[in-house]
Image 1 (tube, rainbow, N blue to C red):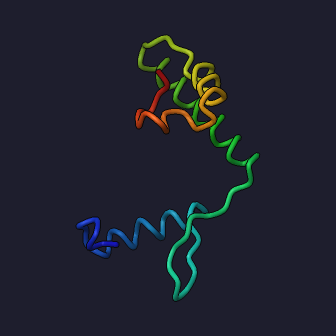
Image 2: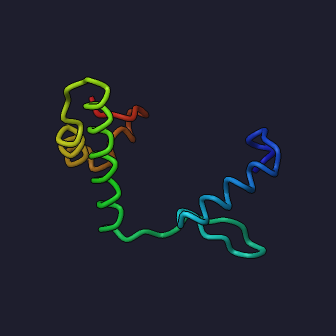
Length: 92
């Protein structure tokens, strides 16, 4: 993986260990790292928190927009997470 990403192994191992410590990855000895499984309600909570934080950041930056409402509507229409089909962090 380090070769593919063109980074040295030490920072990659540190990053993987940090993600495992946060519960985002699971470390299986002699197998590697795997994305931790999440329940649908947990994913919904994470999405809600991210939408709230994005909106708060916009407000703090002096912009007025209700990203949470727009993202929720777009998510229902597309059936996917906000920005996942456009590659942009915020909804259109």
